[in-house]
Image (cartoon, rainbow, N blue to C red; front, side, top):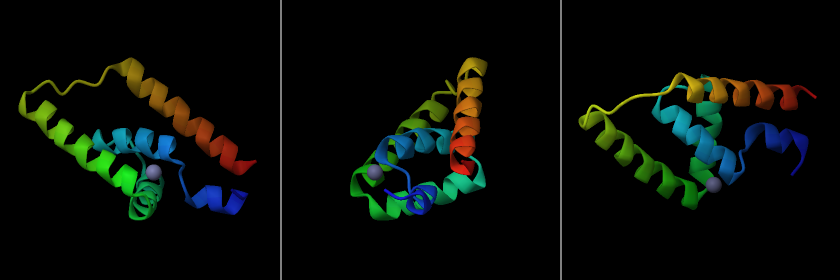
Length: 88
Ligand SMILES: [Zn+2]
């Protein structure tokens, strides 16, 4: 996949990661936009996303919504890495 395309499109594993982040409002607008594009094109990830949001609602309902600081830190690093790769 060319650089320009990669800028716009996730592969499925990135989409899954971003989907998780989006559920917890950890994804930035750019990531959410990319995720939306991917979901529009990828049936597998649409299913994953639907299942994921159901899970999130379950977690919220049971008031177990916790997000360890360590996990947030990991996500931030991943975002940083992603942008660094896109700039090169
Ligand atoms: Zn996908």
